Image 1 (cartoon, helix red, strand yellow):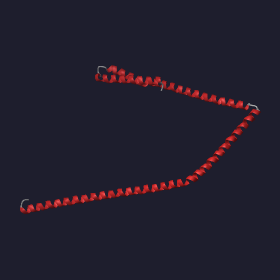
Image 2: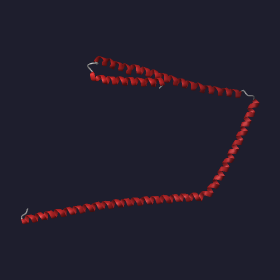
Image 3: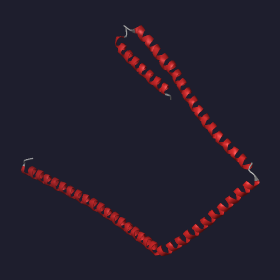
Image 4: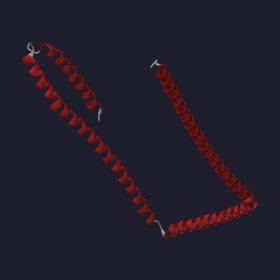
Length: 207
């Protein structure tokens, strides 16, 4: 959105908010300002639904028009570049036969030199890489063996940790069971003692 559209939108929102505050304040004394409130609400509807939307649509249309103008300008520049290259090709065709032959010969020689250089570089790199691989093959194999051993050790360590965790869980469960049995036994003993005391009290006539 353009600066004008953004500024107008913010001003319109501020105006509507201030009017809504006045509206809320005047609601306290509705009978006194009944007709004025009716006019204010109509004014709100006009500002919110017609004027603001019309201004915003105009601002968006202006922004879209500017964007389209920028795209047209970029397209014209691209077409100009294409026309320049076509002119260069036409001029190149219009050269004399001796000039074109010399130009083509120079290009062929340059490409031959570059191709030979690339081939030599490739061969040298390949041989150097083969020698490097042969000299370092034992080191690579040793590193691979070490990695496998490390993986095995990590696997065994993880299995041991899991087994330890399982054992600790079993021990904890067993301790809970044993504690529950002891509590039940103590409770039974206490009930038996109470029952004996009552029996004795009944026997002696105290119950």
